[in-house]
Length: 389
Image (cartoon, rainbow, N blue to C red; front, top):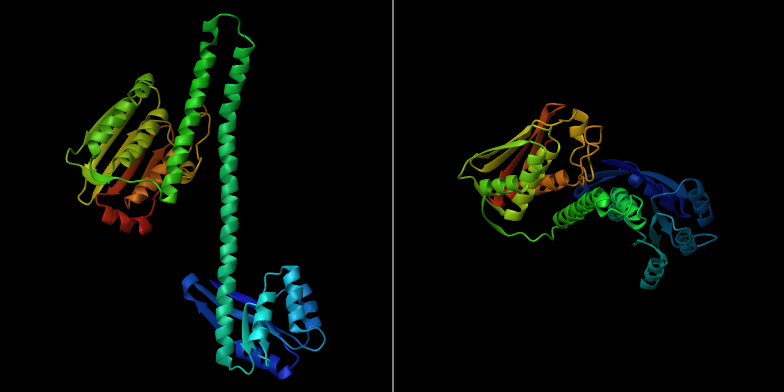
């Protein structure tokens, strides 16, 4: 990235101001740690008063500020900048170099100190150090603001996702309290059942959120051992058997019996539960789900194909974001936390894996997850393996 910083040199000696400008006129500095190239636009001021007047209309990024100036001193200028809380780094330059001067300038807010006389190389070295601090400091502030905004948006979405089911449960409780449907206990069964469904949805949201938080923070305890992938697949199919039967969805399974990987069994179970649950929930009544597990040498490939409602390309593109649920007339009555596929993506990433999705509206979707067998390969893949959507 290329950037130009505004550097203001404040000195009552014309020769000094011209020398600084000449030394920096064609100077650019490279910051390899943050992939930044910086050059400079240099302006001049012959006094503290002139510098403050210029700063009113054109705030610099860096100021080379002479300690001894006619009129107000460099320390006075520094104090004014501190009071105004401007985002400026100041390097004091003076012929009266002393420890006392340096301490006083630093206490007032100076970033660095440069004693006269100095060579062009010494000037550039100081400017390089100051520039690096300036860019890193601003990037850190920008990152902090982005994190604050993300946290705000996350909490806003979470509150929205919880508000609707809470309101529904509250409404049902008011009906129960006021006996609005009569005095027959059985008349209230549907309200109780609807409330339990809503509470189950909120519970799943909270559990999914906890899983996601543990994975993101790296605090999730992992117990790696040889895992029978097909056994976990069958367990997940059994777990979702009642829902499949309710929707008359037939589930087929085909797996390589030797398919094993060194993994955390709980993580593989979460992957299958998300895949199978979605394949059944978003299927058509009387549809089918085909699950396959293939051992392909260094990787295990899991594929789950359904005959469900499918998705348009623009829906697939935003599928793996937090709290992302495809909302349309076909999905309005399907409950979910909107976190399951985000968790799936992150767990796949832990195994150096990738997730691929193929979907056609009204025909169905196929999710394919690739996982490396060994933790060493997974660790390498964590930083470079793409998540393909």
